[in-house]
Image: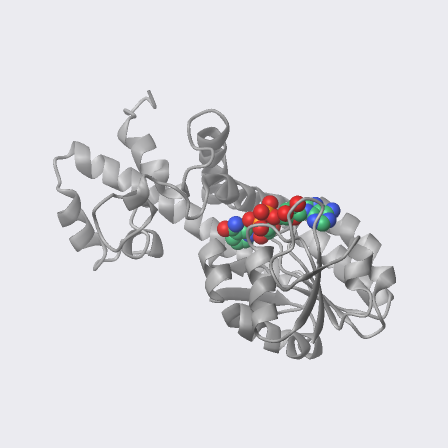
Length: 292
Ligand code: NAD
């Protein structure tokens, strides 16, 4: 396929490189990052989009996505598909899809999980909102860049799935970390705690697969001095998106709200910026009942 790719950062560059390796023709654009090997560098986002059957965007946030969409939609050919893989707010995703539809284009919101490692290995999971026909068009590209793509319904539903998943993840990671810190203070050995919880009703992905305690369970960022992995900053971004969506939809999400507050404190006032989101464990370790 002829593909345009806008946003060649930590995630976009390896995704574009995998498309090239699979034999697709990729023309890319980024305001700062260089194009990976095999990707033809365009002088603008509009130039990258021109003549492409699918234009992929992998950008930092909804405001930037909307600005880029306004530039590329007029340059795209009728029937082409705008495939946004960024994590953005549900409202921006639906706005961009409506603009694309009005211009005779298909549009999919397809945020990913799997991180930079998954992007490089081609093992991302895509959560996809949009028409079934557009999903079918993009399917071969999902197969190259990922191991799984789930069609979640109409436009915006991919972003909805992503923020609901990550709200659960943020909450369970905090719960797992505070339980380890409590177990420490009660004199319970961490290995024993893991052996019980990982096979009992307290189990979760945070405990079983991504255990925040160093030296316990499968290898995780805790075993690498909490280098990300999945940075606390990105968890904060996703939790804020979940709360923005909950506000708009009038949904009661007290645990998600508290997780957003704790990650905001961790990233903005404490030492969480640039650390893995599981570094909440050393944070709780240091604290007492009064939070000191
Ligand atoms: P990044 O900052 O490394 O990449 C974003 C790129 O967009 C940068 O290279 C930047 O120069 C470029 N850019 C910004 N404005 C632009 C514009 N107007 N035109 C063209 N390019 C522009 O970020 P990333 O880690 O690659 O993340 C991209 C998206 O993927 C984000 O929405 C993020 O939330 C999501 N995501 C990231 C991860 C992760 O682990 N990094 C995991 C899942 C989802």
